[in-house]
Image 1 (cartoon, rainbow, N blue to C red):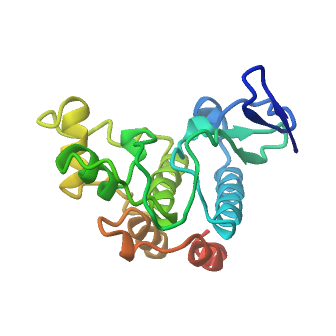
Image 2 (cartoon, rainbow, N blue to C red; image 1 turned 180 degrees about the vertical axis):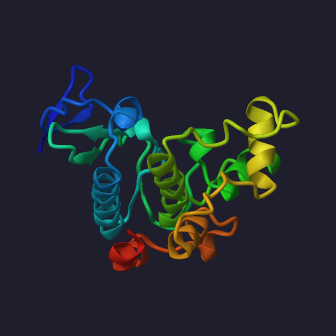
Amino acid sequence: MGACLNDDNQIMIVTEFASRGDLKHCLNDIESLAQRIRMLQDVIVGLHWLQAYNIVHRDLKLDNLLVAEDYTVKITDFGLSIENDGQGYSRFGGNIKYSAPEILKERFVNKNHNYAYGERTDVYSFGLIWWQVLTKKNPFMDRPAKYPGKEGLVKFILEGHRPPLPKHWPDSLKTMIAACWAQQQNKRPTFRNILDKWEKLT
């Protein structure tokens, strides 16, 4: 890994070539559940490393997870990332679908522009990624018709609705994913918590 400046003097991260593209576009081709679980572990390890340096990604989604030839996953696109200094951040970032409810509430209900991003906002996003990688489904696409468009999606999430967890999944797995996308951020685990339990969950 390295770094360089582009023509506008912006710092750019240089990584090895990810020949399989982003996870969004190659997920359906990965039939092996064990392989997908290993890829999720790559993401967890990377996010735990970022948290150790107080970095909040803020834009976690499958589009920003690049896949190498050997299926190793690299977290990318740090354009919205911030240092977690506890002071909040004035710019809304990320995809609504993956944004934590406390951020959506401040942005769309309270019209507040000082959002308290932290590790657990990334944990929420990872919970949705976790579900998506295991099910190969797009979260919230099957929500009821009475929640149309962007406004409907925000309302659906703020009411506490989440994608359905398959009944055949182990209870421990369902419990951890549900904890990741808990409505209250203090109810969500840390990435360290998830890593510590990873082997038992998978």
